[in-house]
Image (cartoon, rainbow, N blue to C red; front, top):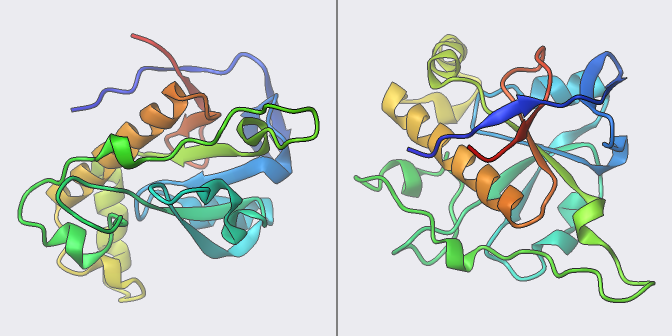
Amino acid sequence: MTKLYTEPFQDIQKIKGVVFPDELKYRSLLITGPPGSGKSTLIRNLGGWSEEGYIDLALNNWWTAQSLSLRPREIHLGIPFHGVKQSLAVFEPAWIEAGKPLKIDFERIRIPPAKKYFFSVDWFKRYVFEFIIPPAEIIFERRMQRATKKTHYVDKDLTLDIIKSQVLIYSTVAKYLSNNGIFVYIRESCDESPLKIVSK
């Protein structure tokens, strides 16, 4: 299992009562994480865009997607897996009903190009990805309570193992993007301080 080693940011700021890394700009923020992690709650607290966005990490130039033009925003990730032609979000039936854990196909994940010219876009400075990744047991309890209201179809036939797999996928993607130069940090809940990913 991918282990994320983290530590608190030393320099922090508050935006609308929420603690963020000091270097973060409000309009650069993209919030992602497994279902039930608290993304929508944080977006509401920040007064961000209420509509959810989606990006396919295997798609060329995903960093230019229209869904990323409105920020801060909640973003769902389409992730490429071995043996599956199309990228999948972890709440899609094709991922849940695969029968065995799907392995991420890292070779298909696209990383933005480095800035080459003075007037070209520096994609590594345009976006900051916050991954909200609470412990699986907390997400499970939260989603089981939500399932009684029948407001989210993704909560149907829920198991703790499914949530553990979703947490693992998001932890692994967060680490991969961070290792490739994208500004990524972790938050375990909306009420807790952000954490930077560090080497073991």
